[in-house]
Length: 386
Ligand code: FES
Ligand SMILES: [Fe+2]
Image (cartoon, rainbow, N blue to C red):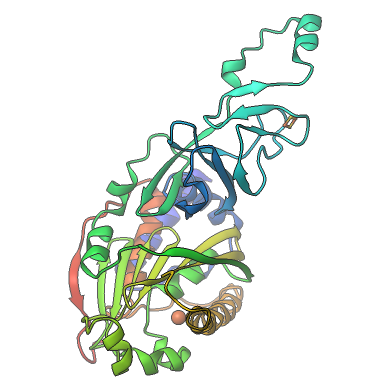
């Protein structure tokens, strides 16, 4: 299988370099999905959540993120730590939800762990060790650590102990977001998750281009100029950024008459952050379930000053766009599942981020780490080029 996969990956990479889309089988095949899980999701930085739930020492929060159960703690010394949320006894979760505690106690048989991951207590352990005298070394049964690092208030985790730092992996993305006014001095206001009947890459392919915006998002395109000549696209191998000027004068003024009233950032494999008027953020994580199902995890990060009515307006606007995107993605998946469709073609400018993402997937499956070197920045899509 290994040799076969390598041969397939190099053939697909050649097709991608020639402008073709990834083959449909990569959106349906459980073996490709298994390879992605081990070579992408077990090795790359994945979004966990906002730091607000673990702002105080002694706090913890849990989430199944991109298929991995994770608990993040802020220990008594104020250090942020991450672990697989799995008990070392017989693999039940050690924590549920979020809160403050001196220890995390597994609800199955009661083993307990410090917020630093060390195994602290095991009911009946004295009696058990007296009976069978096993050489049990408590220190070897701490929670399995995962790396946790932050971009602003956003926590990412990585299962690979040899992974580069989050900032190295993010490359030019935070700098570009900074220039465009992303400041995160806002608070989380809502989290949602919805299962979608499509491969996780179908959702990524959708969010990293706005070629579809005039046709799929008429309401959004009335407010923002989504034409080829107006949208600025920056590709950074697998990562990319998109920025849109406002058509609507009121929205432009609200954004301080900045060049771009709406801007978005994609960090592979599956994290997407969009910013509206430099203060309202909406993030999406396209989390894999299996080869043909995904979870769309979404979060709003909004200024505290917004009234309930304004919050509702932002959320309703995003919900419309999100529903439109999930509907086309599920429809595209039906096309992939036919199983005999010839390769699609990606527009060189408007779909440059998809070409970069497809290359990133090929490189990762081939075992080559993609670096985050900026290839084009900024690259304004030319009028009529797509
Ligand atoms: S599985 Fe956690 S105590 Fe048994
Ligand atoms: Fe869209």
